[in-house]
Structure formats: C-alpha cells, structure tokens
Amino acid sequence: MMIPVSGAELAVEQREGGVPALLFIHGFPLDHTLWRHQLDGLTAWRRIAPDLRGAGASSVPASPAEYSTARYADDLVEMLDVLKVKEVVACGLSMGGYTLFELFTRHPRRVRAAVLSNTRAEADTPETRAARDALAGLARERGSVAIAEKQLPKMLSPATLAGRPAVVKEARDMMMRAPGAGVIGALRALRDRPDHTATLPGIRVPVLVVAGADDQNTTADEMERMAGVIPDARFTKIAGAGHLTPLEQPAAFNAALSDFLRTLG
Image (tube, rainbow, N blue to C red; front, top):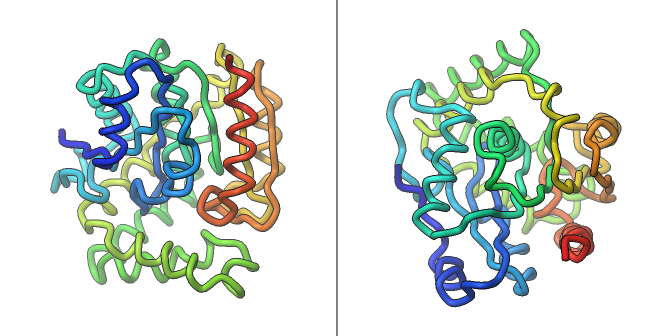
C-alpha cells in the first residue's frame, strides 16, 4: 500500500535522524494538507503527514472492503517501518483519531504520546450507520463535489463560514479532490469501526485532547468527558473552531500542541 509522505517532510525525516517524530493523521474526506500549518510551524520536531489509503495522492483500492480503521493503522506502521521510525507522537483528527485508537490496540509500542483532536471513542449508532450508507450512495451518484457541499457546513464553525472565505475554500477544495472510491471506502471504515470506549482507561501514554468550541460533530463536552477517562490526559477547548480545529485556528492549536510536547521531555 502506497502512502505518500510530503516530499519536504520526508526530507526532514532523512535529515534529522535524532529528532522525535510527529505523525499527523487526517480525517474524512480530507488529506494530509489539513495539517499544513502544523507542518510549517512545528519545525523543532520531525513531521510526518501521510495520505491514508484512498485519499490525496495515495493508492485507491476500488473495493470498499479494502478500507477499515485497522487497515489505516497497519498502513501507517508499514510506512513508519520504511522510514525507520520506531515511535511517534501520533496526532489524529476525527477519522484520524479512530485510526489512532487502532494504533493503541494493535501497535501500542509505536505510540509515545497522542493528540486526539475532534474525535470520539464510541462506535456509530444505528442512525449514524444509516447516514453513512446514504452518504456513500450520494458519492456513487454525484461524486466528491456533492459530498463536499453536504459536509462543509457541518465541518466549520459559524464564524469561519461567515467571515473566512479563504479557509472555507481550502476545506472545500480538499474535500472536492477526494477520490470517489476512497470516499466510499472511508465511509465503510467509519461505519464499521469498533467501539473503543473500553480502550480509554488502559491508555498508558500522555494524551492531549483538543476540541473545537463550535464542533457540531464531536462536541467539546463529550470530548472533555473522554479526556476524563484517560489516565494521563489534558483537555483544551479552542474558541472559533468547528470540526477542523487545526485548520481553522492554527495558532491556538499549535500553541496547545507545543505546550504538550514540551511536557514530554
């Protein structure tokens, strides 16, 4: 499985062999450019920002059966092996967070610390599973453009939607260029992912939980409750952000992430 890493970031990997690594895992229906502000801003760390299978420039399996959060996690570990990276501080947003839970359970020794951004541990409800199937049908009929238009109002804060057209365009363009088969496969992965609420009390590494104050998909209240179940977790809520906190409020997100990283030594 090919998972491209940004050429600049791969160069950082090769040049800075002794610097700890940050692994950024994007959400749905996005790609690694979600993290461009973090890649540009966190220069003291090695930064690895892949496209998951079916996203961005990665390979796109045609069958939805080839997609799952476990597959995403295994792909990432395969990539880390190629890069000769033993452990990472893994940062996952939304679907990236679901993938990070799979890293905790399938490859725990690869995770030195974690950042859970705009995500949850619970599996989908029956209603949400049905909505995933309907969205997959829309993707088959009308493509990624229709998915972008349907998802965008739920992804960004009201302030971003009303007053930050450049950010809105960036998010829309990212969703519109998502490969159709990858969108459909990701929706299957989201729909069928396991419940990881029982995983939370057993997490034995430091965790930062980041919520957007205006997130409609994973509310700040539920994320704060999740943080309360993880033994060594800190919680931060960022104003003016919806579901795409690192893209909407990069300065605040980077500040919170930098503070967390400094605690790791």
